[in-house]
Image (cartoon, rainbow over all chains, first blue to last red; front, side, top):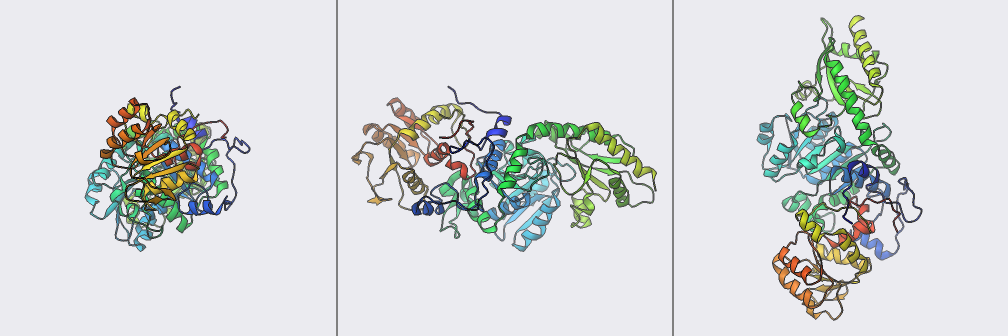
Amino acid sequence: MTPREFGFETRMLHAGQIPDPHVGARAVPVYQTTSYVFRTAEEAARLFELKQYGNIYSRISNPTVAVLEERLASLEGGTGAVAVASGMAAEFATVMTLLSPGDHLVAAQQLYGGTLTLFAHTLKKLGIEVAFVDAADLGAWEAAIRPQTRALFVETVGNPVGTIADLESLAGLARSHRIPLLVDSTFATPYLCRPIEWGATLVLHSVTKFIGGHGTSIGGAVVDAGTFDWRRYPTIADPSPSYHGLRFFDTFGHYGFLMKLRAETVRDTGACLAPANAFQLLQGLETLSLRMDRHVANAQAVAEFLDGHPAVQRVHYAGLTHHPQHELARKYLPKGPGAVFSFELASRPGEDARLTGRRFLQSLHLFSHLANVGDAKSLVIHPASTTHQQLSDAELAAGGITPGMIRLSVGLETVEDLIWDLDQALATGHSSP
Amino acid sequence: MIACSIQLNSVLSPEDRARYQNTFVIQELLQSAKTIAIVGLSTEKTKASNMVAAYLQGEGYRIVPVNPKAESILGETCYPRLEDIPVPVDIVDVFRPAAEVPGIVDSAIRIRARALWLQLRIVDRESAARAQAAGLAVVMDTCIKMEHGRFSGALHWAGMNTEIISARRRR
């Protein structure tokens, strides 16, 4: 018998779970427990010394969460993963594991608003500086790299104007500077794009979004490709004062980063994923490919409808041929560039663009007005007054966000109904005062 | 036996992976071996070789340290060379640089070890082929602790991608 290479959908359903020997539960059991009884005192000591794999306390690892971790690692083509309480927790744990005061990070300026504030303000308090560059300008990335630069950070599909990262070029740039490329791939999911195949070092997810897919639970994850040489990377290679001098790269090789992130950063910062949430997120993950096919088909149809509408000024969806990164989208996301995108309402003489936007939002019947993306249901939000509200006008402009911009997360409803809803809301917005 | 293909984290070519990372050979070795000689086992607790040996002991294997500079490691008598070990050896697990592998293979053949295991990133194709021709099972560029953890299910607890896909109930 030749060993079998299993496909994406098979791994979506099976990776990370082998039916357990005790009861043979077919669904993933929810291990709703804080801690695990040691067999012997010696075993307890070995577990704490990391000489034996196993569970000690659910802040550090949990069997239900482990299924989600391994399944995401398998689908992304990584060596392993750590799942945490949210996408933001995944980003914070990653930068806390990699960076020290005085270090420098280069990041795209087209990022989720929460990530922007984490990088621009919270990291500054920790003595870490971040340079923001236009994600689409490779020269700007290169020019921003300094001797202290320890990583590059980009979103596969940038929030909210759909900037597509040129992953292969950025990976080449990172490699030539011997620094890791960090990619937040929340909007793409491993079904639409696998950044590791293009050279990314770490892939981050807000699992809350399309992976969970049903808007029930918050979760995040970091996947490590296992290909980066951490030998000269101080925080991973040097003896760790908070783990009795352990050198994580020396001891654990290609999973040294993840072991350090779990055994030190998550241990100390505490943003663990609840097992019940991991179960919900796994339920969503089992149908990821089916949902994403429909999400992108609906998004494309909605984008094309809006693109031809007289009340719409501009549609920022990389699935449209006029989008500046359409060719990159075809290269990196051939099945479709996700289902989250923005558009700008046509301005009306004498009216503030924010008012036009508000009237449009209030006229919708099917799109839910809320702060999330990647639900099975269609969602809508006005970034300038919500997700990106904490940003200055200059920061907004740098991220390509205008006051009248509307962001959609296109769901799985009957596509004609979605188009009907947008059409009637655009008409209302235009005709009534 | 788990039938899925294991392919991550190796610097070997696909052909060499098929020859030196055969999932069925690895599973059979881990199930049947009792005594594992560890060449280059360090006395330092945080070194990978020491962590691996301690893990294997915890899993019930007898480990035999081979290190000319120590007398005893992890409670086991240390021997300067493989030839000095007074008991039969199932697996010779190597933590020494590739340049030393040819000599270690000579010794492994001489003591009639059943298998040669070269740890992660220790690659010597010529010596591996010679050991195989002499009848030894050969595993190269993988970690015995990780492989044991992969098939026992324990590596999974650490969130690692074991690459194992199976709907059969674990025993």
